[in-house]
Image 1 (cartoon, helix red, strand yellow):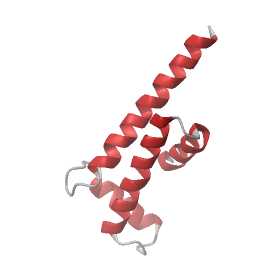
Image 2 (spheres, rainbow, N blue to C red):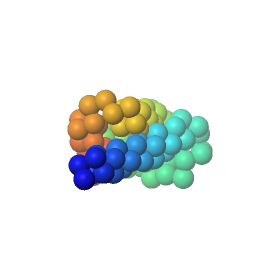
Image 3 (cartoon, helix red, strand yellow):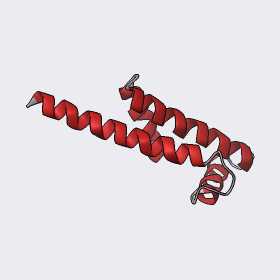
Image 4 (cartoon, helix red, strand yellow):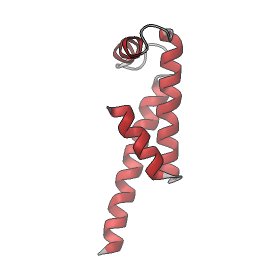
Amino acid sequence: MKQLEKLKLNILRISIGLVYLFFGFIKFIPNLSPAEDLATNTIGILTFGILPSSLSLIVLAVVETLIGVFLIANWKPRIFISIAIVHIL
């Protein structure tokens, strides 16, 4: 039974990693992400406009892509799951 639970957790971790990787990657291509405006507006509000919108989108794309890569690679999953939870909040 433990093996089945471990398999389920691995599938979940990899699935979430793939989603982060995909959505992070499409943010690198201008006007491709459907959440581009939402992301730049939200980051602008959270940073009080200090971070330019073009830079904020690149930073977000890098963070999301790294979360995805590290979740898929299973490198320090607890740390990157925690980062993902903070990102979601």
